[in-house]
Image (tube, rainbow, N blue to C red):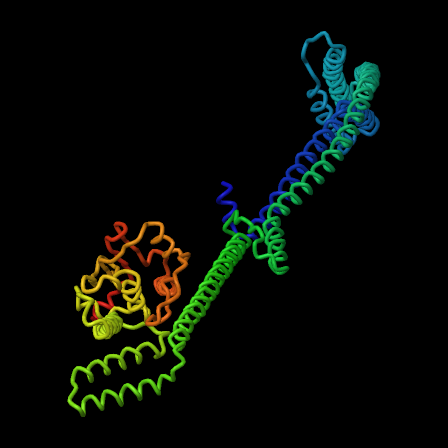
Length: 497
């Protein structure tokens, strides 16, 4: 029932409340009016017997006058008047009680009725004697009728007086009851009025309370408190639908603000990442330029040497100089965009080729590469510093026994690049320190590019947006070291490859 009431339109609710309240007041008024009418009828019925006795007394006098008038005039009109009065009195006397009881009133009524019947017989005999011109008889009958008339009149007067006294007492009681009922009716009317007012106020407040809660929430929201408590929708009327729409709107606004905050936070993190990446790249580029040699002058010089070697027929010298030029050209170009794995592998190839020329081919270099992964993107200047560390800190002093293995393979959604040497190796503590960026390495050798592992690891984390991007394995001193990095593999990378 409450759900059905809650789904009704607001206009029907308010109209229904006022109609029911007025209907209730109307019914109470009808009941009170009915009670007042009943008591008024009881008051009116109090002297009904006295009125009947008065009518009976008047009818008796009419019969006596009609009889006397006929005896005096003996006219047809007076006779007709007698018959009318006689019939009227007979009806009234016949209505008197005939019950045999111990009540005085009942005995007197019964006697009056019997005396009245006798009186009417005497009057009729008197009239007949007069019409028969029996003077002596009608005189005797007239005297008897008149004597009976006086008896009846006395009985009626006495009965009337006794009933008046009895009815006066009853009338006083009924009047007091009537006044009490009037007071009671007034109290009931006021009670119904105030009760109806309280009911209407309560129901109106119940109907308006959701609107007040909605207004309070709207005030808080307009004051800037978007976390204000939302009113509950308790019905399907206009206010309920408005409350539900407001709550839905506030939830949408809050979700939008959360999304905006997340978007701004993500944008801020991306900007920080770009700044950090740019800082690391600039640091790497600056360290490459520490040789204080103008890159263009260096490239022009190397190209001139390559041309001279080619003109003199020194093919190996030409290839070497060209390799060095390619190596430095890659190092000093802009490194703030990802490159394919293929570029990084070529840089490692050139680097090993240069070292083998310098050290008479002491470094044995092998590759196990999945060519389908060559287009996968990764940060620039990652593999060469790792290989450089493997040479400088692992196999530099091993002569022709030094070996480096470069592998590129895929496992699930990650692409792994492994650089393994058979050099000095390291302890687990040192490997962990390098990954955490806490390794205090010795001053760089003269042939180093100056990029440390902390720079490599930091740029890898920024690029992959995760921390587990590099792993360093070593079984101990003299057992070699393996550095494994992993980068994400996407379907676009695979198609491009």
